[in-house]
Length: 222
Image 1 (cartoon, rainbow, N blue to C red):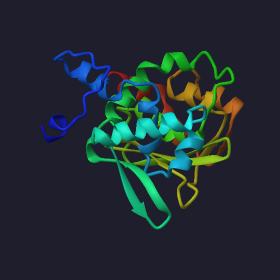
Image 2 (image 1 turned 90 degrees about the horizontal axis):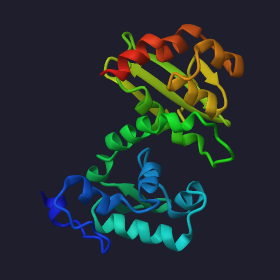
Image 3 (image 1 turned 90 degrees about the vertical axis):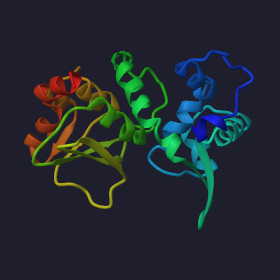
């Protein structure tokens, strides 16, 4: 209850005694959840946030960060490289609802990119969310490379997780445009269709283990 008691009430509050309404009071403003999305993989400097959030005005980013700090969602830390912004434990709790929103919005991704901005690192949040419920025993690791950015998607008995910019390149790597990777994850493309548009280095069985129709169907109902 400590977090709730010290949450700053927005001047544009809905004024409703409802968990959803009060959540939107805090994170419902334009760009706010996208700032959280950027910080979910780890702390970032202000300039890094500004670069990744293409299109946000400098004064608006500063305002959103101040509000997130006031609400106990983001904190500033002093590191060797300077000041960075990081999610608090309460702020990190937004991962699950944001993954759920990503899954809900997956059909909207099938219309294509249409010139929209894209950062490959966003897949580190999107893929585990889209593949929630998928498991593997023994665990498998698949590298996913798009626009020159490499991440490792690991699936084990607990489900999927992702590491952005791993120290070592995994044995199996699938390289493709982001539209192909997303299409494969949401079941809009078959393995063969994805392979015809991308490149696989390593064991094809790993790709099938992660993106098989049976696994995706099981994940959708879990």
